[in-house]
Image (tube, rainbow, N blue to C red; front, side, top):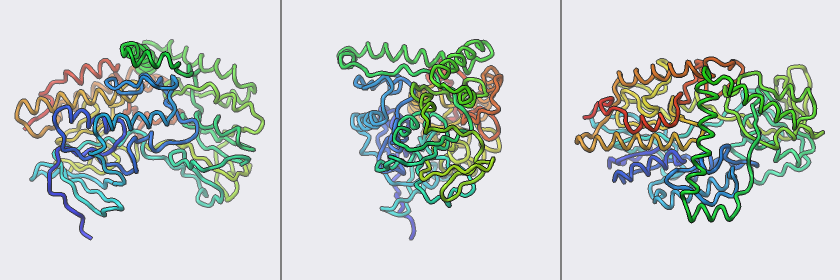
Length: 502
């Protein structure tokens, strides 16, 4: 059956309805751009906060900093809000800013290409409801998130397992773990939240660790109702709390990670704090040894927890660091030949960023340039983390060198600022097409690579970290190696001449 063709040229198509996509839509609507279509493969908005529902899910930085600065939420119940509250915040933003009318769910975008003759984007998609469809749009924005493509473990025999298998991104709310013998594969930030929640219910739990994670104390607790009321009555007080939290995160990121050459001592202090935290909570010396990372703090995103380490003191919880050889119908077999009999397999194996998420869909620009192929053959790169040469009228919100700071919202809002500056200049000049120049893109890439030379990624010991910060070429091109202040300043002041406007 031929696809349905919508011949109306929309102002903008946004792929993704998480915080990034909603922020982009808000920025466009502030500019008077209202003919917007927002597409999402899931059945509701929220991105990662809709998909993830595993026990223990919570934001891993203070809630006051994990929100739009222009839309604070005074009613977070805890310093680190649980996942359900983040989903509710998504719904609140979509309602307040009238975004739901732009959204279509259950839609899979197959790809997009720039039509050089018509000078617009052609977006191919399909859904169970309408089958194949083609949309055309003046602007294309991809907001598919960094952590959106689940990574499935490539372990021989996993398809033969007869028990229950659940990935943390597809958690079954009806799953009863009481009395089961389970294995968790993975010890990243998700597992650190999940394991303490499910361990008490299980008869036996074996945790398969490939790479240990740096864990520091978590200054968590309920936010008193009086303080919530104060935030609601006097918003400046919450802005002050946000500023303090953001400042702490900035010091951690800039001093401990990005300016490692100058602040190596700070990095060492963070490692000692994490080790002391573990020493206070884990009784067995051998277990402590296995849980201690062998790479520098910051090579892999650290996390915070007060109840992860104590879980390993429980007699029915076992830490296994011998690599997995294969999986049988009722067991995991490690390379030393030991069979670990289980009936439930929990996959906390994280996300695949660099193989399937950059980009998450096929994007074909001017002169047939394939974005994914170009990135892999010519270095991962994006001017100011948002645009690329040969891709007119295209904003890629999850791109190399785009992630600024530890809160995703600093990335979102700096990109909103960049979009606003560029589109305002286009309107002022009567232009309807933009494209970053090769020269500006090359200069930005060279500057980012130079900054990375001062970071823990270049100077620390990162070879064993297996960090998603690094792409398949061993380059740490996910994070923008500047302060968030610098990112916001450049988003507001970049030379308009870095773009060819027509």
